[in-house]
Length: 302
Image (cartoon, rainbow, N blue to C red):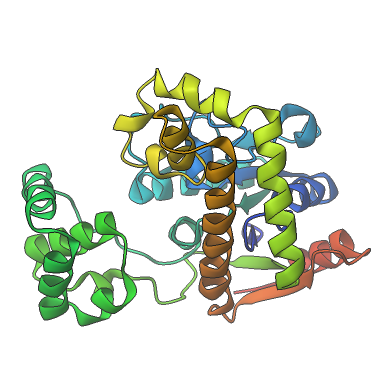
C-alpha cells in the first residue's frame, strides 16, 4: 500500500492555519511541517505569530527556528528538507501536514518543480546594477526576455533572480514555475475568511504583537544582525519597527504601516491560493471544521 496523501493547510495570514494543522495532526496521528518562510528564523516569534509550545499541544513540528536572521531563506533547500521529512513521517506510519502561507514554498513541497542553479557573481553584478540604476531599469530588461515574469514581479529580489536565471539557463524564469502537477498524492485544505472579518483580525493581531513586545524583539534581533538578513529584514513588522529604532517612526506609525502591509499581503495570498483549483475551501468558523477537513484528508486524491 502506498503512502497517504500529503496534507497542506493553506490560506491567508491570520486565518488559523496553525490551529487547524495541530487539530488535524491530533485527529489523524500526524506531524506538522512549517511552510512559512519567516518562521524559519530563530527569535522571530512575536512578529511572525509563531506557534508556541503550548499551542502545539504535543504535536511534533518541523522546520521552525532553523535559520539565523542573517541567513537567506532558500525555497530549493526547503523543498529538499520538506520532502525528506514527508518521507520520514510517512515511513513511521504518520501523516505529514504542511502549514503555511508562503505559496511558493507550499508548491515547492507538493508540486513537480525544478529549481535552476545560482551564481553568486551574477547575482552580485545584478545587485550592483540595481543600486546604481534602480528597479525600473532591471524590470524593463526583464520585460525584454521574460514578459510573463515581468508582469508578475514587483519585488526587486525576485526581479534579480529572474534575470539571473535567464542569464544562466537561457530560459525565462517563468518556464520553471510549477504547473499544478503533484509530486506525490496530496490534499490541500484552504481556510476561507470573510474579507472584512480578516481585515479586523489582522489589525487586532498587530496590536497584540505590539503589546506582547514586538519592539523589544526587533531591538534584540537588531543586535544579532537583522538588518543584514536579506530575507528576515523584510518580514512584516520587522522592517517597520526597525524604523522606530532609527527614530524615524513612532510605534503607532509602525503599527499602522504593519497593518496596511499585512492586509496587502493577505490579499496577495488569497489571489495565489484561489488560483489553484485543487484546493478545497472550508469556512474557518465552521463548527465542524476539523471533522470536515479530516474527511477531505482521508479521501484518496491524486
